Image (cartoon, rainbow, N blue to C red; front, side, top):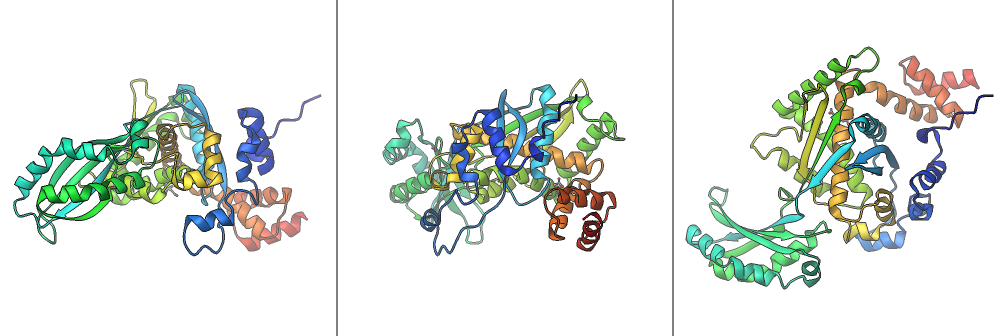
Length: 425
Ligand code: MEV
């Protein structure tokens, strides 16, 4: 007698998947309650988050499987409306496992806050005066947030730049380097800048104008690397060398051409934003930082690099700013964000940043592998076909049966789905 095969994770219903997570990852399902229908963010909580609230807006939360990051198994929650993203990340995480999965690291969580100083008569003299007052200014900024300082954060350094050319002429910019520990840090640094501004103004002899953090968080970087063993790369009619070299050629296109780099980086952000959003972090800040970092040489280029090692394996690397937090803001208030952190088992912002950058790298690989071989439409078509089958009225097991036929026929249209549905019913 043959034992029936256990259904795979993706074949389960959403409640069964939650049960699977509890059973296999040992995460108490009550911690993930926020993901179930009707639970999660309440209208009252939402009403305190932003202005003029009229309701709630839901998006799917998927779980990417197979991720091993710095030797640790991680189930990654992804909030996204686009099909194929979660499946693509999971599949690439699986391909990465034979070589050990992803490694990832971060620099210290140092944000940059900017103070614009106008009406300075002698820019160089004012710059020197501010630099000579560095110790005093840092000392003062140390008193602003005793809790952050007690956790090892707070002001770290101060830089002064002269902007020689601008539409209003030259001016000074002071950068306050601020270690925000496990917070995203916007509030901490903006508060520090506003409090420091009067002293900066009097030392500079000019007039302080803007006081705001920079989203080009290039001192708060996250980096991930992956090796895909050569024997993992071949599929269908594509040889391992073809797939590997095809991926490298696809990356070279993005490295050399901003038109391609924008789309290439968008693919990375599919993975990055989905985890950023799942954890209640500010995805616009991450987007702004990513694209500004991609243009740091003066020419917009790829955030990732792909090549091969001495054994002919595929190797990838992604480095980008990653200003995410696990305390404060929506992350603290949103029950879904709290559940997302519990699912990943992260206890520091650095660990979260490492997971996000690994997922970005996996997502980039999924896109390049598809583009360099069969194209991306086949993968998209399968999920799209299910949506079309549902739109045509298919229910339960009929959804997959109708969708399979649509894909086979390469004709994913609602009217064809209706015909197949009446044929099969
Ligand atoms: C689609 O959301 C993302 C891709 O366009 C990324 C890429 O082209 O690398 C497939």
